[in-house]
Length: 71
Image (cartoon, rainbow, N blue to C red; front, side, top):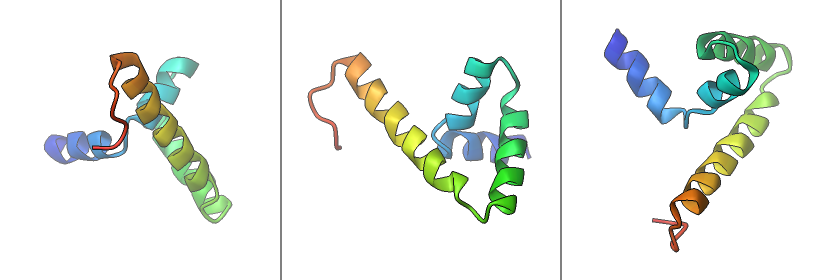
C-alpha cells in the first residue's frame, strides 16, 4: 500500500506537497480538501491543479539552469 501511495504522489507532480509546505499543513490534508472541492464544484479545481503543476515544472527547469524545456 505504501508503494502505491509513493507512486501516486510522484505522478501527481508534487503539487499537494508544495501547497502543504507553503501553508504549513500536511499534504494528505491538502489532497483531501482538493478532492472534496473537486466533487462539489464538478472538477473545476483540476484546471488550477494542472496550472500549478505546469508552473512548478517550469520553475524547476529554470532553477537547474536547463536550456531545454521539453524532453
